[in-house]
Image (cartoon, rainbow, N blue to C red; front, side):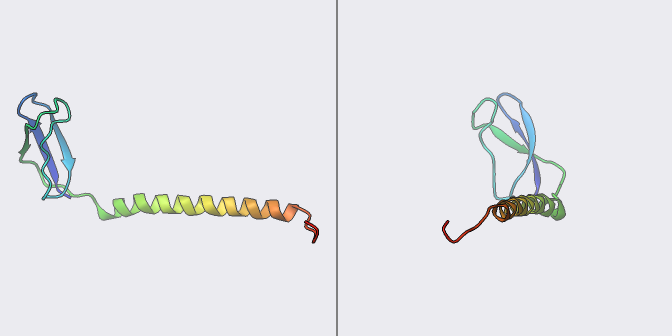
Length: 86
């Protein structure tokens, strides 16, 4: 996604953010007025592999946690004495 720099015409606060070319921010987060002006900035993209890694890490962590929980439950059930009367 492109990187944009905005400056508030009222309070002069400035910041940089990534968003779609179709999006346009208007309200200043500092003074809450619709006075943001998009300034020219250098082109920047987020690497796709960084995005995949972040999501991939979350999925891998969730799978690992689920497997640990499943193995603990199996161990607990194996330790119980089962009889047809239960």
